[in-house]
Length: 146
Image 1 (tube, helix red, strand yellow):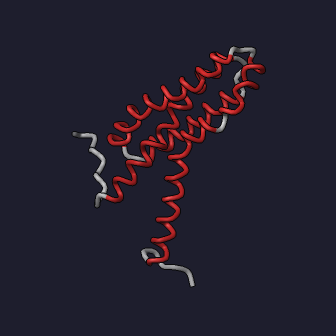
Image 2 (cartoon, rainbow, N blue to C red):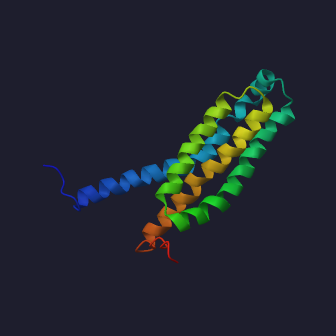
């Protein structure tokens, strides 16, 4: 027999699904840094760059992550959680594609900067959603008139 909306089984399944999605969103930033670190020597060879230049891709990503939290946090407070989260996720994927096909080091550095910027949306908004859900009623989005 299927669970009725609002039943304990449906609520538990929704909570578990939300928890999984929020955990994956929070993991995109750290995953995007740890995944490619072992390939630094091969990236330097493929791009014809120095080891220092390839290491700057990590620095650019971290700068983007820091700046993105300052942008996406207030943006999600102002416009709600879902639109900035979807926008950040889509742009993160596009920045990842740019990084994957980068023909040279400057393009890779720029791609990593934007990848970090947009990865921060998942990190900061996932935490905000948890705070909203655990502090009682979610705050209403400000109206356009205020």
